[in-house]
Image 1 (tube, rainbow, N blue to C red):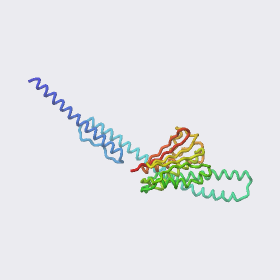
Image 2: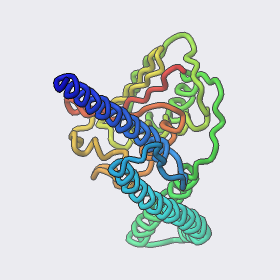
Image 3: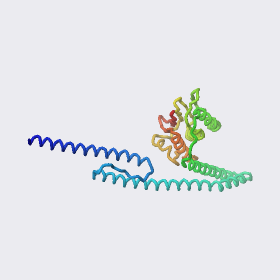
Image 4: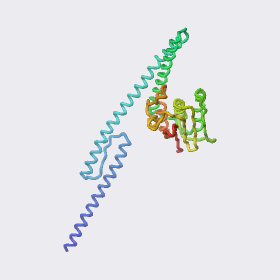
Length: 294
């Protein structure tokens, strides 16, 4: 009789442990699922558990406290980011009027008879003024780009957009003595894009190549929607290349650059569902933009 009683007690204990293990696993699955949902949403809903296990509930309470703090920090960041964007937009807009006036006065001065030194200084002033005007415009455009305005996504020919972007820089390439090597498929490459935004992406990349190229430029488009831009760039290294998409970052050879072109290109590319990366191999810079078919 005693062995059967012992076996019964052991079986009951095992059953209780299995039930508790099942409830614990269910609680963990609930926490994992709800935690993923809370992290992906801006919501005040806490994590709820169906179990009454004290340890599981303490863990859920700690996760809820951390989620509350994360939500507070996220809201603080979003508010600060919005204030910064508004400030950049206002400042860049307010700078346009005095810069336009300065340009007008420079135009008047250039019509006067001036000594050679004065004319040389005037040229330096105009050069710096144009650089500041360009920076102001880029700041204004960057603030608009990061404002999360809706893009007009529709079927568009990636090949045509790239061709138009290259044509718009034909004169600038000629001034630099650059004869581009271009490889495009014969048939259209249709992707769901905002044509204007895609043209801005390609234009910023081509402009960047003209600033840093050592005298050559190549671009190719594959049928899979991958565009590869490349140029010789002896002053670049892997560390510098990794920072090209950072805001306001420029390398030494791009003294007239604002450092926003590639940052804007990355923002727009990602918003259209594409990817963009930069690589440096054997003293050549490769910028790869890919828009996969959906």
